[in-house]
Image (tube, rainbow, N blue to C red; front, side, top):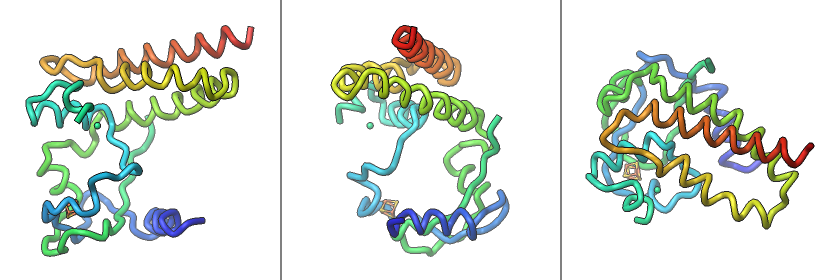
Length: 174
Ligand code: SF4
């Protein structure tokens, strides 16, 4: 297990937070360890919010990126630790509800998506998969009207994607 993985496992086992537990972190906006990272996965809702905040279209932005929700603390190794806040306060500061419906819908989608994509990869092979990653990204991350509510659009796109993958897997197995 690599060091990063060990840190994550340690955080999951020992640093669980409830909504009102305090933790120390303050972002100093330095950008030293949170930019140019390939291991930080933005959700489509992140992109939707960033595009709205920056007043950019999703295309412009990307050419420039009932499970139980549990939180755990992992020191990001940056910032200056001058502020202590609870999870609830941290989420409030970004206007994100603690029981955000999107997290649940996103986690459910990921579970189904990962299973289907593994099956599709197994059936189609690497070179065919290279052709379908781009449309998958387009449906999941770019097909949103920024003037409309995000969640219904996400549900529709996610369903479309899962149905499409199911059809590929079904066609290939019959
Ligand atoms: S303190 Fe950390 S999270 Fe904040 S900008 Fe710097 S690297 Fe990014």
